[in-house]
Length: 471
Length: 152
Image (tube, rainbow over all chains, first blue to last red; front, side, top):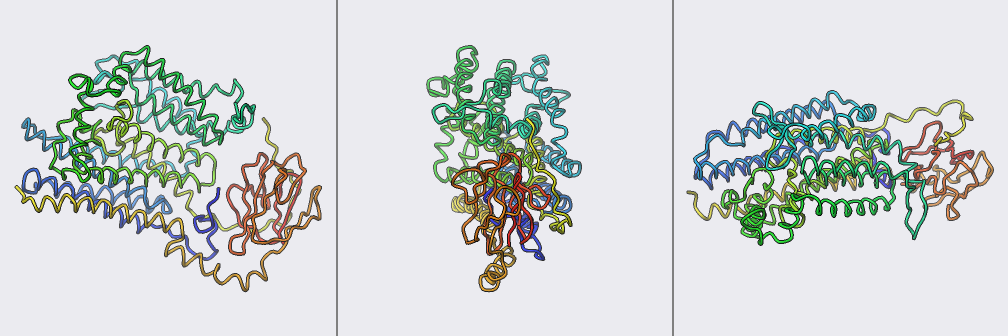
């Protein structure tokens, strides 16, 4: 850890208040809400020529969500990072705007009414509820470590559930990752992701010494013992199983990537990254040879235009959209983002790229970057090893998911069907990610909270022996 | 339909608004990294006022008070002090319970902070295990394996 005194809350001179920066957060939240309302107005004015009446209701509701969350953070996590919440507010605001804009396009083309934006706003409210619940229940993030194995079990059950349910309940567009009950569809994998990250963090904190130290040096690389490869092989097998039984490339890639990177963060051994890459290459090769759906994805990725009438249609439309957008975009409401199939969920980044252009899309990525940077920063300054790994893992999960999604949309990676966190249409993803940010807020509060004033020196120095680590 | 010129204003105005948000967020990041206005009030005056007065009062030597190296003294300067079994450490320990790069003492504006460098058996300030950088007061014992050190 290299943070100097000025960034380290503990080092602040005695007698000075550590700023909580809550007012900064409030100002930025206000700014994010303002941008969202501006975006909504621009969409309405461009598409229909007038402001719709619902905008006032939407604005009030949206602003109320963030006002309430801000007050909750102010009381329950006063030292939390001031940028986490505004970044999330802006991302979900932009997402809601784009979904509303696509609703308008649907209305014009098909005469459909209602739309998905109000539903998404409802899901955002549910997500805010989860955020509050996490902050209320979880007063200390270290509590999570105690339930690590329980959470691992829950995570695995959530992950496996769609695979064992009948296809009529769990299958949408060929991927068996849903649970559809009574009109609601839930993607349990999004919640499983968080549970498993908590488990990974707790497990690796326990085991990192043996994973980091027991190794042989071969050609300048620390090669771990064969039996220590167990956990990474289990994670690998798990990802393969997800791929086989749920035909979901995205979750599989997401989980394996998160595990390998957390292993690297815990042990500081780059050999784990190489082993991970090797296993990934082997898995990818196997999957390509054995599974038709993976081969289709890879083939359309390599040459989308050759398959433009079949599997490549989505990607080709997305590329055309991004190309039409150019540097500055077509303006909100000025493009035809509805030309991309499922633009609201999987391809919302393409829709944003078309209407906001490269400058807008990069701005979106930078906002994610801020979110991730704050998470990693939290990981650097928090005092306990579990908190470090957990915050690092959660932040990396957001970054990795965004990379895989944007890679898919822009043709850099094969399409995966992961959602753009906070922006894309989809209840479970939004709610789960609100939970994820709540945990980050909780850890960052612990990280930035000034330490209790140093205890007065104890009378006896004490001859207590230093702790000896038993293997 | 809204006039074309208005649409163009919307188009570029909105991008500008987005980047203004990022600019504002970066200002917060910067304030966090370099102290910012709120932090500067807290952190700079002691540092600025320190050199003249504090140098005289601050700790001058690092003394080993227990263990095989007992009695060793190191004069403190501006440079950080690396403690461990590795040969290039400032204080080379011959202690089975010490790691090769065990701990580091750093000078920040006349005050010394101890940091554990991921050692196996830990560094203790008084009886507290050092997790992140901790401010060391003169006379406060730092324990590494069988060795105890203090600032004087």
